[in-house]
Image 1 (tube, rainbow, N blue to C red):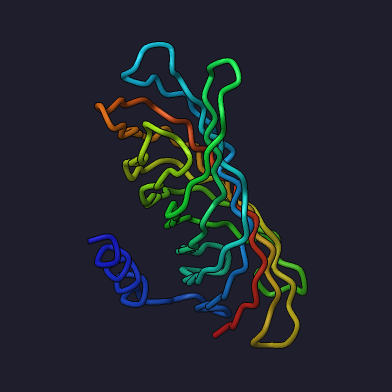
Image 2: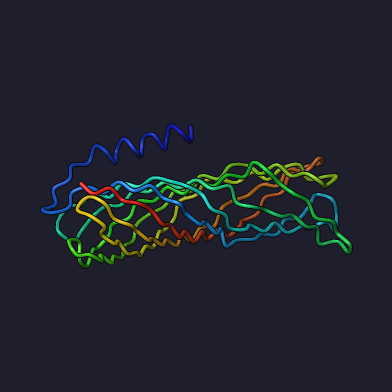
Length: 214
């Protein structure tokens, strides 16, 4: 279902007509540093066994399409996929840590941008829009009770700013930053039950990419 939704978004992107006077369409391949900027605390069904989960940033890759509706206004649609590092540690005295795998985060963003110099050598821009973040489950190893953590996909605000540096008429280097404040519901699955809590996930996405302009 998740990949069906991604395909639907990409289909909608390519179906939108471009009507700008000078730039009509940018296609960008991204290398992105995604820092989930997040942590959370769960309470185990067993007494006095709360634990923390922390997320650490990592590099991922993605693709973006930017469609111009005039000289200064465009709609940017980006998808990036990253596998952030996570760590789990019990609150108990001498509590041991654990490691996870399988957690994959896929932010999809749609942003309306204002370009200050779309035809210039340097084109700074700002924007705002929405983000839909797909979050896969994290399998947990190294604990006697906790087996996995399930995350609910979430939607929220996306704030955006960046710079584009023109290399040739059709090529540019783009540096982009996005901030996506979210509060996802997460369920920790234990051998003897489950517990659910809200986890603040505020991804900061710093991307660099090569843009092909049409």
